[in-house]
Length: 76
Image 1 (tube, rainbow, N blue to C red):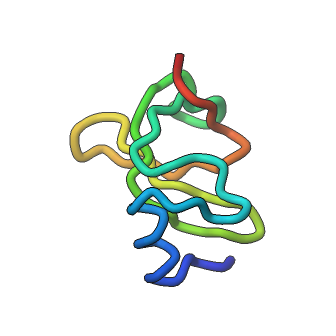
Image 2 (cartoon, one colour):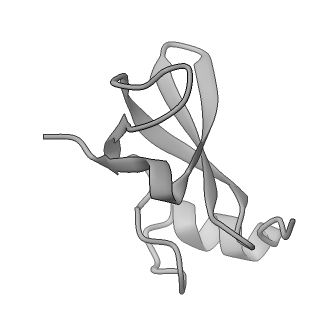
């Protein structure tokens, strides 16, 4: 597991593109897998960059779940 450096995390939160990271901070996404499938939430942090990007998704006020990049999509 490779966590993002503080500079990378700050750049992502600031709206800069990060290679291999397909979604932006505050993007509204739908969870496609796992216990919370179908829920919609906002991306609030990067947990991991490699081997797969994992985000923290806030699906309700102060209710945060991890989600793999391959298991989310932009919400309609």
